[in-house]
Amino acid sequence: MKISNTPIPVLGDNKNDKMKAIVLTKYGSPEVLSLQEVDKPVVPDNGVLVRVHAASVNAGDWHLMRGTPFFIRFIFGGVLKPKIKIIGCDVAGQVETVGKDVTQFKPGDEVFGDLSECGFGAFAEYVCATETALVLKPVAITFEVAATVPGAALAALQGLRDVGQIQSGQKVLIAGASGGVGSFAVQIAKAFGAEVTALCSTKKMNMVRSFGADCVIDYTQTDVTQHGQRYDLIFDAAAYRSVFDYLPILTPGGTYVMVGGSIARFFQVMLLGSWISRTSHRKVKCLASKPNQKDLVTLRELMVAGKIVPFIDRYYDLSEVPAAIRHLEQRQVMGKVAIGI
Image (cartoon, rainbow, N blue to C red):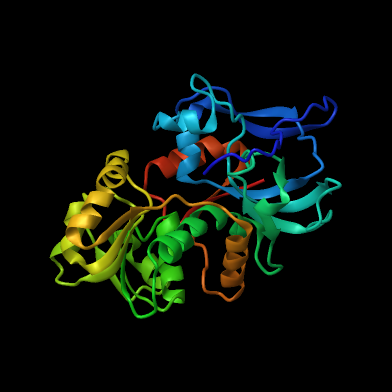
């Protein structure tokens, strides 16, 4: 994620036009978030003002909230206190107003998208975005469902297709298959024609089977590294085991892609990935997803075709965003957490 150089204001300067939003004033636990009345965004010439109907919660939200790992503060500004006052990247809603330079949308259009490159701000009644951060929402898809797709499904799509170079007929292992990114990864891998093995805990196995996984392994009962099967691609959405544990079950020339997990594992892959790739004849990579409109269109097409169907674990209201993030931090979420606004 990165912030665009295009100035899209999060808070406007019209003192007579207010909205409710979840505001972040300092780094910390979910208690630092509060529901406040703030100014509505002012729409620049290249901006789209969206009346938010739904949002969803991602791991990136709690990283921005807590300011951890510390380098997050340098990437997004605000070393001592947050520069981003309203977080939330996944959004779905209705276009309220467009700037004079906007050509793709008009007032009344129903849209969804990823705000992580234009200032965030989804946890509010209104948000201003660039038009390239949004696409039209399928008519048959609810706002709540559409809002759960962008961030997690983009990571799954880019991790499998662009980093993992997934091919039809490959044997693919999805670790963390019951979470937001993992649940989409199972479905997208199947859409690419792969043979999918999914890792999850006991109580989540039925849900993961419903996504179409060919084999579901309960990691609390079976060590997949001792299972006797090799994989062409390992997509790790919950990297808490060492990458070295997975190398023996990766085919020569195969690829391990880390998408989410612990900070220790992130640095392991970042620092040692190139060396491991050279010495093991297996590619070890880390995903740095980049939102783009073309991939949002791809996800919309997959939704319309019924090839990806979000599983929504819980619904929360705007005022309950702190509780929603707290629930996500416990790492017991199945699928996604939706915010209705």
